[in-house]
Length: 175
Image (cartoon, rainbow, N blue to C red):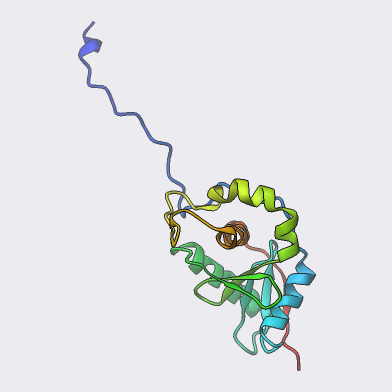
């Protein structure tokens, strides 16, 4: 009878995901062999690197065993994922985009793959932002040109790899 006077609880917001992740997980698969070839090119073959399932690469310290390399790479990805995943994308001389992060990790956006999937990238790039993320660009908050949309697409692969980190290969530098 007195239930009508009971204080109403405020509506509950859905729980926030932590660490924040984007809603978009592209179904696009970039060929690991081509990514490895591009990383070798970008580093002049001078670096060992570990490659995760979705193509995220971690440049390794010299002289690590396979086991140490995998542990090091997973630790790097963990650090990026559990901090703010700042990205610093760079147009490369071959037309691809190299998405760089703190702690020696990168993703490559292969230009031909991005062009083949441009409609999806263009339509879904806002879903590539992590929960409550605001990125400031010269176009305004969370407004992106073609380069920025492709960079966000590439960063999605880092998030996918960080949520389920599996090193699929360790590439050794050229002798």
